[in-house]
Image (cartoon, rainbow, N blue to C red; front, side):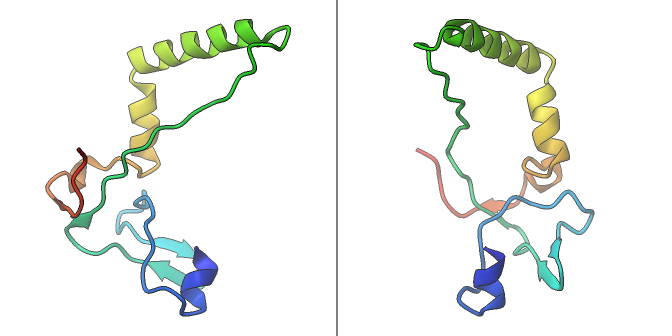
Length: 101
């Protein structure tokens, strides 16, 4: 992503918001600045692959699911995504360019 911008091959990239106060992502001498009042919704999810055929695969699968339930109950998933800048409640009123259907 960074190389594409620095080489002049792109004018913008989709990236999560920085958790910095000014929302700017800094990489070396490059500054990625968000377009004011504009955001894009990405309708995706994260996945972890577990081979249930592995001797401990079922146990690992069950432990991961149990851990995810606990993290969700404790609201730690949202907390981490907010702290990382992926979710930013201060930008809730920014316009969404695309709509998720």
